[in-house]
Length: 311
Image (cartoon, rainbow, N blue to C red; front, side):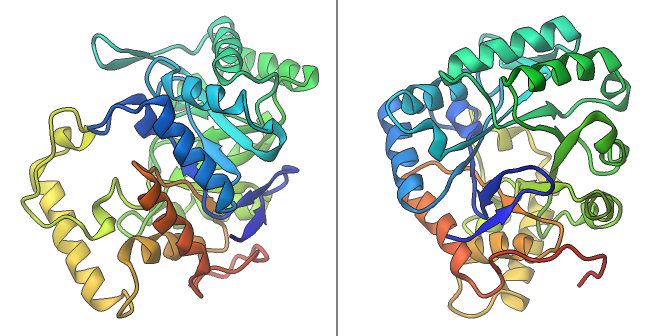
């Protein structure tokens, strides 16, 4: 495994992190605690130290799985990133926004309880609009929680690379040191405005959806079907097939012979000078091991000086 400093935070993270939306049960599989424990134990053996989760991956369900694991592991060995701003209704299978300062404070306490910890390494504004982002009351409350030691670092998980990228420009003003953004070979939008801003401010960058919801795994062909319990079932059919046709072209023209496409796609993200770590999800230990091996590709350096020069 390779490691990088996460921007101007004091965190040093593995270049391959672990996204845990799948633990909430929305990707066509319900997890047991035993399965989560196996994944997290193996992640630790592989040198992965970053876990990214959220309050609304299930109703704190992903966090609870992680918390149960942490209760019998060394908390200090892990960098735990979670988020605030939404509530997941299991019965309706939908999220509702919760952006008031009082609600955010309750979400923080609920996340701390679910994770069975007294501090969160990275607490992230979760995919909100520019309007709710400008709520000074929320950032004032969060600053107080940083001073109290419940939060070590603040971050912003931007919802849309085109419509909410301005939140990145204001990151330093709200004491956020990390940006999380969708970035992959099929969506390079952050290269235009988000990443240059991150470099100017020395912000760490977590690239989420680095495999484009699994489409860049190379496992699916145009016409692939997904179960109704899989979030990809709701994706627009024509757009999915268009992406999968592009993936075939990328595989033929850009992926070196003999290189696993998923690993190449993760390493491709990590070669950008703004990106610190990628946070792919995983359904089992085998997939986790394959993701971790991406760190061994030549595209990935241990750490790279931030630069305004781009590929």
